[in-house]
Image 1 (cartoon, rainbow, N blue to C red):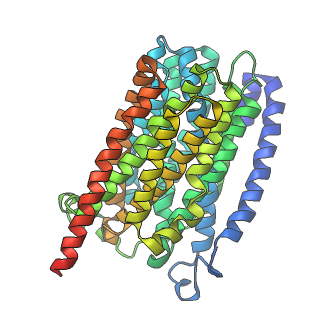
Image 2 (image 1 turned 180 degrees about the vertical axis):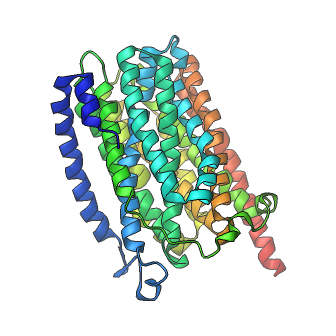
Image 3 (image 1 turned 90 degrees about the vertical axis):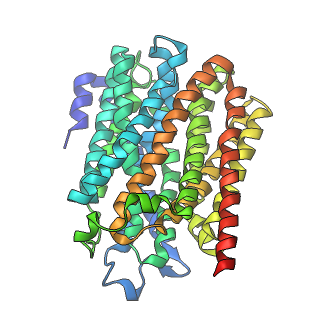
Length: 450
């Protein structure tokens, strides 16, 4: 394992002491997270594993807890890049139109790694992918710090690409958690792991605030080194995850064809709603920090806006699974899309700190309901032997579409401004609304036919 302290000492001796102080704070947050996650894993006075399932899922509670905490630590990688990427891009890019390009490259990394990650899972298991992802996270932080020191825009883009690979692996934690528990608890385990992002929403922005000026005259360089340290902690935690062996070892390459799976109306609806939820979250979140800077708001206000946004993204995860079990995934997704619509409307009403923050908070909650609800539907669209292929394909489609939105967001913001970015967000929302109406009609007709 790479010794981050040694790297820091070589880069600048005075910075090492300050980074160690930040690391101690991160450790305290981690200990608090562990205690809270253990208490939250109680659902209706029963733990995530009941007596009848202990033989099949002996490490369910430990696995879900570890994956939830790892989501918190590893999720800070994405938060740091979203909070700083456009600002550093604006500092280093040859043109202001390329300010959000590093975040677009981050999304490219997510899309490019989804299918290869699925192939590695089939060949060597999920833990191998977890370790590769964590390694990319550490590399991303170190390369980004070096890029800032060298004032290299293109090296910074390489760093964000590896950060995107890490982010894609982190998002697979939700499906890994679903594999750790009995079928009736899968949506709850999935939403619990996503809820770990609440702590990512605290760790990431606080890393930026604590460290952004530590290594003068290189803004945010220390932040990325601290990000690499957090990646090391996440890797150590993931080493203890013990996933159940698949009962159908030979079936990983069997099952229905992808073409047949893609023709399922429920799968189509789930993918479209997941695409719209994640596309718009990334579309607006990419532009917001730079838009706040363009409107004369402070870097601290921008960091805190991202913090509240990420908390809003993941905090509902503590009860989204229960809402899905009670009201159904499709209704939860619908509420999520309505909240994203309200987010865009709020942004159009003003450009002060309050409007930006409320826009980002509503966007975060809407993303959680839309994306987690759609992910729960995906779990119902495949057999056990098809799971890795279907989940990887779903993530590839979602992240691949995000690439388009991320590139478009930066160019629209630089050319036409924040208001135009917000107006554009209504186009995919209308497409998702039409899809949900058609899905409801198909479900109604199918029910009548039976």
